[in-house]
Image (cartoon, rainbow, N blue to C red; front, side, top):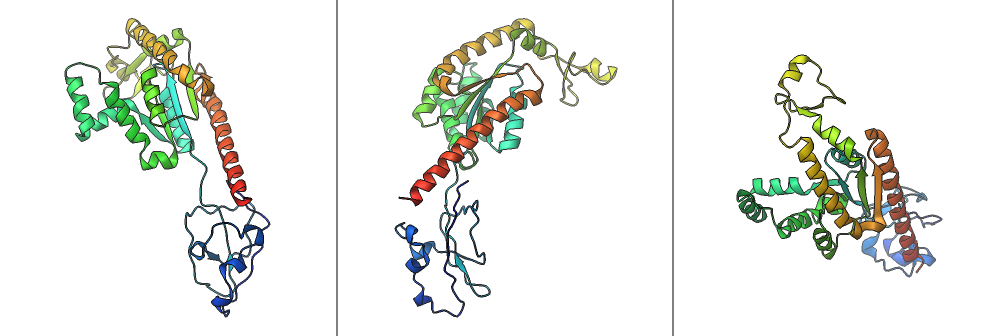
Length: 306
């Protein structure tokens, strides 16, 4: 947050002639050189500006004095930039859970390429139609189409205002380079690390209840009753052989991307409880936010003291 302090104000009587109180006479001398005009004035009943008070309006306006003396309030009109985060993790690394915890606390827009692809196809957009043509033929959707979808979502008003959490993307150096060319650079690249044998155990033991849609694990989260256990099903690719192939692909993708983000990569031990894993991530995100706010305060101070 920006801060202002030690500002004094000239009270304006409700009976005063407004012509006698020009804008320049109300502004402290050390702020008189700033490019304010009368259109930037705002009057408030408050008699002081607290040291941590921040105004978030780009433009101010005149408000008629409600009951006598009013005071000039000056404040900054910008906010610190929001968080821009990428997160990567192998199947069963707990990435989905951590994404929920991050978005719940920090209010970021959660963006997953797979979800975008399905949404574009369902909406019948031009990108969706092109993607569906490839998928119907059993082919991979070209990078150009997926990158365009991701770019448009990152440029969305909510993503720009709240910040974003890009989930499982980019998956290749070409995708990472394309995002960089479009001007998207994360503040932090989070990599969840879990030993392969643990990942295999997590995946192979997963079961789905087709009635409720709930996911169980035979070891870590067994079904409550024998009736539920009897109807559980296993995904066709949740076998040891298939999961090892998926992990091999994941490791190749991560290695290709890490070189682009090596200076901002946070490697997190994912072989722990979800609270402990989030504790590692939360500490890093808090530090990034503090750095962003400190930089913004510094810039605001420089602007005022020019």
